[in-house]
Amino acid sequence: MSSVFANLEPQQVWKLFEDICAIPHGSKNEAELRTYIEKVVKAHGCVVKKDAAGNLCISVSATPGCEHAPSVILQAHLDMVCEKNELTRHDFRRDGVRCIRDGDWIRADGTTLGADNGIGVAAAVALALSENISHGPLEILLTVDEETGLTGALHLSPDLITGSMMINLDSENSHAVCIGCAGGGGVTSMYELELEAPKKNYLWRDLWLTGLQGGHSGMNIHENRANAVKLMARLLRTIDSACAMRLADFQSGDKHNAIPREARACIGIPEGKINTMQSCLSDMFDRFKNEYPHEPLLEITEQSVSLPAHCYTQETTRVLLNLLLAFPHGVLAMSRTMSGLVETSNNLSSVHLSGKSCTIHNTPRSSRPERLAAVIEQICAVTELAGGKTIQEPTYPGWEPNPDSELLRLYEQVYAEVFGHAPFREAVHAGLECGIIGQKKPDLDMIAIGPDIRNCHSPHEAVSITSVQKFWTVLVRLLERIGKMKAA
Image 1 (cartoon, rainbow, N blue to C red):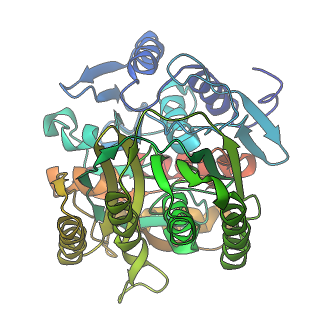
Image 2: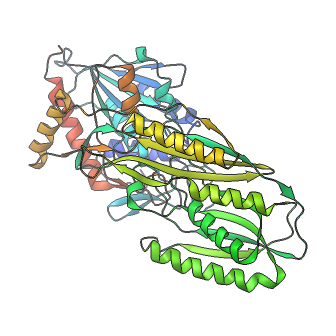
Image 3: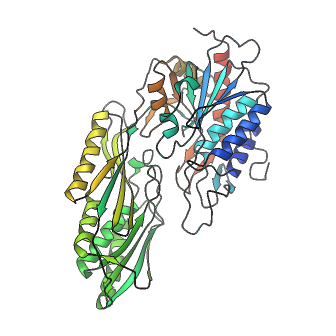
């Protein structure tokens, strides 16, 4: 192993994670990683099956004496979110992730790390390769394309798996056991803008709003992190009110499940209004810093650019900015049954202009189907008021907590034996594959666990070294305990 991972325990997990990081595996680009895993486990004598969606199921025989134990599914997803800082040179289609050891944390060099869910994949494959861990029959289910619509799980062939218990390895808190999740969907709004020739007596500027934390649009939505789309829309509306600007471009956000971190706009300002524009930039920067003191790296910068090929009429620009400001964003309701849990939210995840076309994406989530439907209806209504059209993605189901789960009882028992106290139970405001897989296999007993991972879906993502060892210890002990049971 490289010096980054030298002497880390469990060695097999970290060695596999290092190999995974070296292989590009963004969403819809998992083929090389899938081939690598197939080769590794087949060499160890495991049986591998695939379905039409590209999901992988690795069958691992029980160790001697555990043949009659319940069959356990270990589930993780192969793909990672591909985000990088603006100045980072990295091609996610071809380049592996460069890892850095920072105290108790492993992070990447200016990109997402992929611990979500690479560390879960590494743990599952390490169990398949283990020689000294007792366990019953195992099925390792590795799904594709989780991060861009859960499509691997949505198209999973139910016949691919037969186990009665499933341990999802895609959680991000070693102190907790996850027993429920939100459902969600997506809405794409399309709005047509009117073009006009750019005014030659205008000075043209690129505006950049950068340095925001971003983060997961479900797991971090309650932290009131700033949304680059919203801030840029407010900034442009302020400038327009003072300067009668013209808009030539607006780009922000490229992942539906990430809070936008950066935005760029190209605007034209009358020659005599540049000082006014700069005053607007300064005033709005101060306002944003006061509103979001937890965004210390926020920056607003400008750069002179040449005359663009076209710009948009003032009327349609103003409708666009009002539309972006009217969309809901953030927490919309808290759970009435679980303290501190977000029930319903929306993430205004992206806006992109191309010619006459404007495409905007929203990602609503809710643990209550009726509230999810209401948010989708609101997004569609706001779009229609602006004269736009919408395309709704299929929604996916949540996962209803089962406090009487036998697997949950066993996990809490083992955890308490190892650490002297029980983990706390949680449900998450994010779409886990458990909800979809549970709908396909209604009798499946499920929990979700994992090590401590912070700032998922952003270049600040990092995984705790000590928590990986803790996660592994409890997972191994749990499988050993189940291996001593008799299947019903």
